[in-house]
Amino acid sequence: MMLQDPAILQTRAFIGGSFVSATGGATFAVVNPATGERISDVADCPAADALHAVASAETAFRSWRGLLAKERAACLRRLYDLMLSHQEDLARLMTAEQGKPLAEARAEVAYAAGFFEWFGEEAKRLYGEVIPANAHGRRLLVLKQPVGVATAITPWNFPLAMIARKAAPALAAGCTFVVKPAAETPLSALALAELGCRAGLPAGVLNVVPGTGAAEIGEILTTDPRVRKFSFTGSTPVGKMLAGQCAGTVKKVSLELGGNAPFIVFDDADLDQAVAGAVASKFRNMGQTCVCANRFYIQDGIHEAFAARLAKAASDLLVGDGAAPGTAQGPLVSDRAVGKVEALVADALDNGATLVTGGSRHPAGRRFYQPTVLTGMTMAMRAAREEIFGPVATLFRFRDQREAIALANATPFGLAAYVYTRDLGRAWQVAEALEAGMVGVNEGVISTEVAPFGGVKESGLGREGGRAGIEDYVETKYVAMGGLGS
Image 1: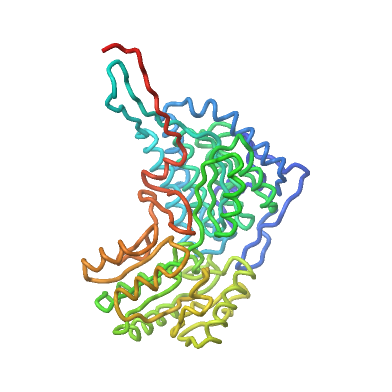
Image 2: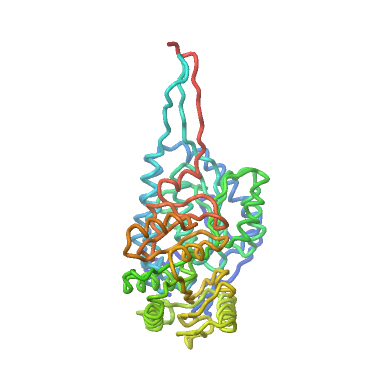
């Protein structure tokens, strides 16, 4: 892996403004999922290092919160600029450790950088209010103040964006930040720390604690009383456990958890547009996104035509090493991930589904899986209930709008949903009826830093991005001032 700036490849933890070895000196290997090559050995931090990071963040909070919003915004703007000027190196690093195609990695770098730009600007608009007094001689004020030390545990599927989406609002609000990145993808996080240091973030404001001991590090980040806000992106069972750990100290908690997104296509939809949106939603990052379409509900009148076009588009996707030119589908992140996809496809076929294209591992290597389309799906199949997290599109039939909404909502999850129709009235009705935190209408890619991201039901708590994204990092303080005369 050739980098224009080799210094962004860091392998030690970033705590208190310095790159440091793990206490005890342990390391773990970071491996390229496409080739099996060892990229580097990274500090394997124990709980003691997480405690050190929290202490550093607490110390830094005292001065960071005292800066003018404009001063914090300037730091975040410099970080945004540095990320874009290092976009190619960051993308190559991400592709090497995570596997996604370079084009997608470049897009993720730009997306991640956008959070630092957006929230740097929002820092200057974190307004309080003056409430009309309820009595003579009183003034009623509302202040927005940073909550304190914020911590996060982030996943491997978007190793830069998931950190940026949490760190940017925290830093903008005046909080300090400690993150444990996924063990599969620590290099992106450590590269961000290097650029943050260059951007002028003071020591202790941003801390990165890599490690394989997720449980022991996670316990510190969720139970330490100095931590006042915790954010997690990952599976619903783990999110529930971590939220429980936060309860003992009554922290603010944000959770972006699992999804089971429906993708509804009505007879009147623009078929070309719907297929393009399906490919973008389903096969981005090899289907390893929380918001990717999991269940395709296609109305009877266009089911066969949609299935044929989607199968053709899926089979045309070039599978291979993400670093190779033209690659559209890289490897899945692990052998376990491939095994899960294989099991879900086998269960569907055993229970009557029809394989239209794909359905097996790809010759490119053991972690590559062919883009797959299945028809004849029923709600009895595991893939109808479980998040697939792989390049498999499962097609169901429906008769009318009422049935489509009922099927789409028949899940404990509610992160994202997608609807394709030319009927404006139907678009409004279905969007309002769907039990999801986000809905794409004639749009397969909905994530943006300027809009709130999050789910309902068992898909999570809170919102990231947009104006709402900074609210979970502030406390709302009411001040009643009396004795001011009439």
